[in-house]
Structures are given as C-alpha cells and as structure tokens.
Length: 620
Ligand code: ADP
Image (tube, rainbow, N blue to C red):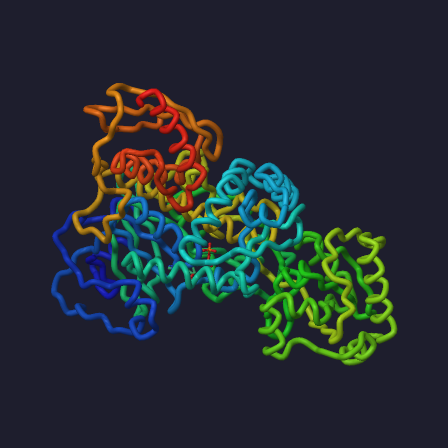
C-alpha cells in the first residue's frame, strides 16, 4: 500500500481549488508514500500524527484508483465491496477523528425481506411487500426503481454484513412495516455500533487505508468532465490532491447543518437534531459544484422520540417492543407504530409539543438499548402507574386508566382508539417507566440523484463519469419519509453497489495501478486445479437467480470446464458481478458446480450453480 494522509501538496492544491476542471495532474507518477492502514488510522493516536514529509521541496499528487469520501456505513461498505471485487487501490477520507458518522447512532436495525430469520419465525414477507411498505411510508415520492433494488438486495445485504460478523439475527417490527422485518443484533443492542465495529474490522483486515481528520473539499473533473481527483485538507488545514479514476461520495446527510435545513425547509427552524456534528452536507456542496442533480431536498425527517434536553434518541424498537406514548394529560394520542412523520406531527399538537414514552418492566427486559437510557438518567421509574404519573407531573389516575385500557385492547387484539396492530405486551409488569420526548431533525431524505448503478446523475440524466454515491448523501430511496430500518439497508445495498460500480469503472478506464492492496480470491484467473470428466462441447443451462432466470454457456475442453459465461440474466448490477467472478472461478478450479456461494450474493451464486449443473447434465 502506498497512500499517506499526511502528504502536503500546497502548490498543486492551490491551483486545484481555483480550477475544478482539468486540475488533475501527475496521474501515474512514480511517487511512493508511506503506508497508512486502517489499523493505524482508526486509533486516535494515529489521527494526531504530525505530517512527516512537509519539508519536501517539490511534492506530487497522491494516487488512488478509488477515493471514498466519508467513512460512515455507506462509505466503509463501498470501500470493502470494491476491494472484494478486486479493487487494489482504494482510500477512504474521513473528516472526523473517528469513523462511523450517523451510522454509529443508528439504533434500529436492517430491514430485509425473505430472510432465513423471518422464515424461522414463520413470518411471510416478500420483496413486493417491502417495496409497497417503503413507497407508502415515503408517500409514493420515492424512486420506485431504487426502492426495488434496495428490497431485492436486502437479503443479500443482511447475509453480507452477518458474514462479516454483524450478527443481525433477531427480527422485530418498526413503524410502517406490515410484518416483522427489521433485523437487529442478537443481544438486542443498538445496530449502529455493531455495524461500524464490523466494518472497521473488515477495513483493517483488508488493509484499506482510512485517513481520519481529512476533509474532502472538492471533486476534480478532467477536460471531458470525468472524475480525476479530490482535493482534501488534513487536520492542520494543509491541502493536498489525490488523483484517482473514481470517487464514491458517502458523506451522509445535512441534519446537523441548521442553516441548510432551514434553507430547504423553513418549518424546521429551531429544531434540535439527532445527527452527529459531521452531518453538514459537504457532499451536497461538492456535488453541486460539478453539476450533479438533486432530488427531494426539502424532505427532512424528524424522529418522534428524542429527549429534548440531552438529544438522546429512543429507538423505535422501544415502541416496537410494546411501549406507548402519552401526553401531559396521561392519555394516548396516536398509533405509536405510525410512520415517523405522522407520530412527530401528533406529538407537536400535544401540550408543550412533548410527550412521554411509557412502558413496563417486560419492555425494559426485551431491549438492551433501554439500559443505556436508564444509565443516562433520562428515564423515570415507579412501582405503579399512579406513582409514575405523579413522578413526572402527570395525573396518576389518568395514566393508570390509560394503562388499564391499553391492556384491554392488547388482550382483545384490537386497539379501538388508534388502530395499533402490533401490541406485543399488556404493559402490566412492575416497574413502570416514562421518558420525556419530542421530535428532532433526524434524516435528510433528499440528496444527489443516482441511478440503480449508484452513478451520480447530472440534470440531463446522464452520469458524471467516475462519480458514484451511496447513503444519506443521495436522494430518492426514502421519498417523503424514511421507514425505520431502511437507512441501514440503504447504506449496505447501495454502498455495495457503489463499490462494485466504481471498481468496474476503474477496470474499464485504465485498470488498476500497480500497487495492490490485496488479491481477492475472486480475482484470481480461473484455471482448473483438478481435471474434469466431462464430454467436450458447449452446453447451455438455466437456474433461478435473485431476479429471475440466469442462463449460462459452459465450455468443456479436454474433459475439463474451461469457461462459463452468463448469457442472459436480470441480476442486479453491482451485486451479481461478485457472484459471477467468485462462483465461476471456483467451479472451474474444482470442476464441480457444488461450490460455496459468494457472501452477499447468495441467490445469484445459487442461480449460477444451478444453471451450470443443468448445463453439465448433458456433458456427463
Ligand atoms: P451514511 O449513513 O450515508 O454512511 P454517515 O453519516 O454514517 O452517512 O457517514 C458519513 C460520513 O462522512 C461521516 O463519518 C462524516 O464525518 C463523513 N464526511 C462528511 N463530510 C466529509 C468530508 N467533506 N470529507 C470527509 N468525510 C466527510
């Protein structure tokens, strides 16, 4: 590896800051810089290292094949997928001292349909229902094509993160979902830290450099309008340029930039935010400068249950697992499992625009995340509903009556007042708990416009060559309202697609630089390790993939399978390539169609194997 965060290229950068066109230089230079790996840079110690080579009289631009801007869930996923697909020179820039962004704060889980965990619980779900729920939740403003890609690849995304070690195996229900679909860590803790830890460890394993406290400032285009570099500043504000073939924009949203929030939606002036301080919309600004198109910028979601003093967000899982909301009069006022926009609006209509999240011991015991709220001192407890009411300044008798009525609805399986369908628990197990909450800015649904290959589009609908984007910086997936659990699905599905698309783009545009990070197995040229025992010839076969039939053509020479070609399929761009490379190489190496599926592309892998088996039936 040869990238360094600490290189200072002031003269070149100064020019680059003025000219965004044709500003890339030195591509293919011989420069070799000090190695900086994720292992080194993810520690705070490494982040504060001083520049080591600032005194060099003349410095050239750094080089990379792919620069990923932002080390949140989407960026880390994209970098990993690109390397898994064979990319050899990927570098991640992160402006904060730690990786994770808003993803770390994500408390819910990953929505996926048709999973083994749903099946084990007898939950009937489908891609179509997932799409329907997401479109309905987003008030049909969503880009249905993007939503469909997200739903179709959700199961593979879940398997991919679980294969990396995330353990999202418990299925729960969140607002707007018709069935239990959100997959959470088996210890019921918040998903964000688990996911970020898993991705960090994988980056480290794959030796992918992450340059912390390094802020990307500008994306550079060449004379033809294709991406050719990024300018960035290190923690001392020293600027440098990285020449590259592709950029993946994964800078997250702008929920912590109150000026930008108000610019796009003035009704949200003065709102608190659940966002980390780095969610300032840098990616939007960078993309705007180079002519990207945007979608749904005014669509900004508030999360209904945020502590107004500490801004701690109570995960929707508390309501999903049984909690109800009551106002200052001790009364319920909404179906607690309605979508976030509906619940937020209902809270704002209550006295002082706040409410209480109330639950019993059984709910507390069902969700580890609640312990952190208790520890933070933002949950009031009491032995009875009456005492709880008195402790929070609400009429105790009214609150007790609300509990009693709700227990009746729960028992009858029918919420006569608000039509809540999932009522997990009767809320009658002492102790009783209450937590004050109000809505706060949560997710910016709008962003750069992408297509299903995660390419960033211009206003004329054509892609900016070499620019890809994923995660909260993009718009279109969530429409007017994001469902809980869809952010993590979005970042993993489209992060993976962006990584694969960028790697393909690099391969098609000059190929890799000489310095390799790793040599993933799937990239090893396929050659038989054992001899086959088939009749020579060309055979065709069909198997069932993720999105329908996959047709293959298998060539047998001198008794061995020498090539396999996918002749027809509808598999998702950016996902199927990993299965295509990995499974085909393995089949040829082992001369059998019984090989392991490629993680994260299980259905496609199985479809290819089935098709090859069918083809080989004629070659026996
Ligand atoms: P997503 O969920 O889309 O991955 P996150 O908020 O989790 O979004 O992550 C986005 C990451 O991008 C954050 O860690 C944030 O600090 C980082 N980031 C934002 N702007 C820049 C920038 N200009 N340069 C480098 N990193 C950035």
